[in-house]
Image 1: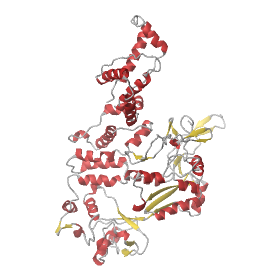
Image 2: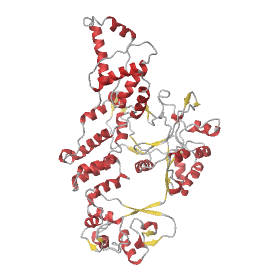
Image 3: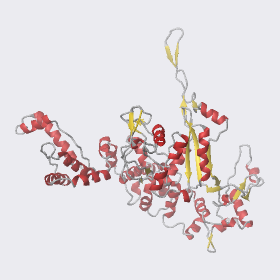
Image 4: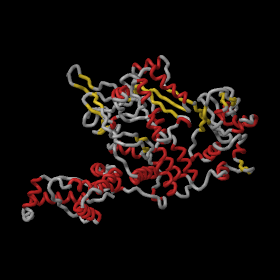
Amino acid sequence: MSRHHFIPILMCLLATLAGVYMIEFQKRGLPHAHILIWLDTESKCTTPSLIDDIISAELPLETDDPEAFRVVTKHMLHGPCGPDGRNAPCMVDGNCSKHYPRLYYDEKTIDGDGYPVYRRRRNNRSAVKGKNRFDNSHVVPYNRYLLLKYESHINVEWCNRSRVIKYLFKYLNKGPDRTTMIIHDNITIDGETHHEKIINVDEIKNYLDCRYLSACEAVWRMLAFDIHYSYPSVMKLTFHLPDQNVVMLRESDKIAATVHRLGIKETMFGEWFELNKVDARARELTNAELPAKYVWHARDKRWVRRSCRTCIGRIVYCNLAAGPRYYLRMLLGIVKGARSFDVIKTFDGKLYPTFKEACYARGLLSDDNEWTEAITEAQMWASGNQLRTLFVTILLFCEVSSPLQLWEQNWEVLCEDIEYKKRRELRFPKWEPKDHQKKNYCLLKIEELLQRNGMSLNDFENFPKPDPTLLGNVENRLIREELSYNVSLEKEMHEKLYSNLNAEQGLIYKRVIESVEQEKGKLFFVYGPGGTGKTILYRAILSRLRSEEMIALAVASSGKLISTSYETSISCRKNTTFQNTYTRRLQIFILCSHRHN
């Protein structure tokens, strides 16, 4: 997509409440843009039907909308991959890394992680592209208007959870792809003996940390086209404790001269106090709200009323281990028009000696709520590893009254990246771990962090411990594959099949389920001519067991083996070969009744 295609799309940001975009270049040449847009209240999509009107993941009907069908077929079909394209770029270890083809859904839903699951109906619509046929399960979500206007690949997604937005921001700001290249010739030929000589090369000394710059990106930058944009602008607000403002010191500067430098005590935070002393309008704003109405002039070191544009303020993050600075930052979010540090520490006419006590007086701290608030705030920008490190820091250095309660309130936040990472580690993109499995992985990582600091989860009373047996089962590829069923779909299938069983099928069904539930390990032989409903019975039993998260294996024996077992059942003790075969079949059927704990 060329630059003149980008500009109209990006101009839509100006009509929204806020937006940011980042242009990225690929090695094959042309740039592409990642755009994140916040809509205002009147334009937000609050119901699935409104989302379906804007974003579609289905093929249009060719007879009703031939232009849309043509463009979707040309630009918005993923594949071929999987069995039809094993060498496709999206293939990783035999599976599509983008999880195509997707499952069919009659209605749009939101999964547990806040990601949308778009409507993909099984309506027999299909399109032929090349030698392959595609249906709704291969369609990349798109917006019809943008697709028809620009006729290029434009993937449109909807997000409504802070967790999703955070990872989108991380993707937008990940920076260019980089690679480390080592260029050397460590094999030479001796001119006299004509033998090869290997020279040991110092890889640390002789390396080049290079960045690939395509011709398209080079031209884009030489012409000074915008690479990124955000609206509105965000201003970073610094703060400090009394007489503890940050001073930049060069190597050539002398400390005594720097301390007595003119204007050294005038800081952005300190001038906020001075502004509140003389401006009644400023006294109606908190420190974070100030940039919306005032502009900071760094050269003059003063705040001036804003005459145009829009800006929002964000107070810099402070770790709870910082002590008084952490509690001062909490107060800055609610105190308006402060003219000194004492005003910040004053509540209901009483001056408290510390910022922490002022937070208690205002109800900002109650039991362990302050630690939960710290984790909740960090959740907006921190990664999973950083959140778990913060949690361990709280356990080690803060006075937590109930570590168990703190874990129960925040375990979902601490586990937010577990599913993604384990899918990549286990090379199983469709694996959906249960809550207790996520907790186990998270507890294991917390235990590792605690042991680095000489402690363990055993040091905290009633705190849950990771179950190593459960983790071992998840790591087992065979068990993991047999537990990858969609439990809800299996329940629906079981209800449908069970309602169609006749009396004789129901009797067999009851006997088999009874053997499984009571762990009797019986072996059953169902005999009947073709068309009597044996397959429906098997499927009903399998769906029942799988809906209860059991491992159920469906195996088939050859007709020759069945005939042999019938004819030689009396003399099976003498026939060692048949006895071993019969024993293996028996073990397989016993495995069908094994409940996975």
